Image (tube, rainbow, N blue to C red; front, side, top):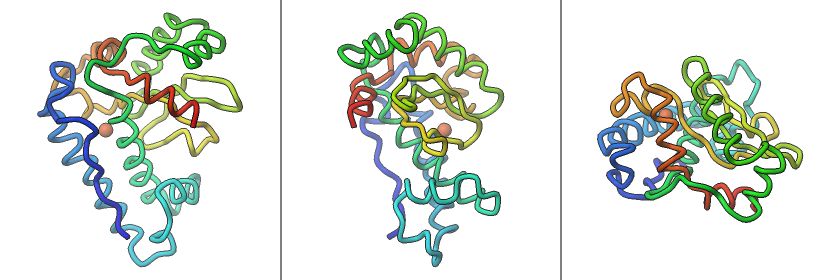
Length: 198
Ligand SMILES: [Fe+2]
């Protein structure tokens, strides 16, 4: 079974003005789709073809001979996870257990926002900033290129894509403004809370 590009969990214009339908027309329909196509071509007629996306990522992580498979599989997963990390009318503050864990492990929600934004802005070149759980503790991390928390024994809770293709059409070179808009208007805390429970 070949992998398919998953549909967006909302309409392509649902996150405007913070993320435009024009951005989605490239980021989802072109970039994400290309990772799916590349992955299918790379695993065709191999023993990876019968595995789930998560199984493929874990099987080839750290194997330099399979870097192409890893990069495309992880980018398929990362983008699907990113779309769900946002929602129309998102942003603001989480609640309940997730908020309590952010306060306990990350020094409070304001400190979380400052540190998450800093991770996203200081990721040199292409990559991702993440809220993850590792060994029972919440952490803020950043990864380069396609790298993804599950390759490091971490459970992803929320992410923002900081590849230029994520923000250039709407924010040009202003990555800090894009990350601020993600935190203020897009972050899907219900998704993060469900990931923490799951
Ligand atoms: Fe992306």
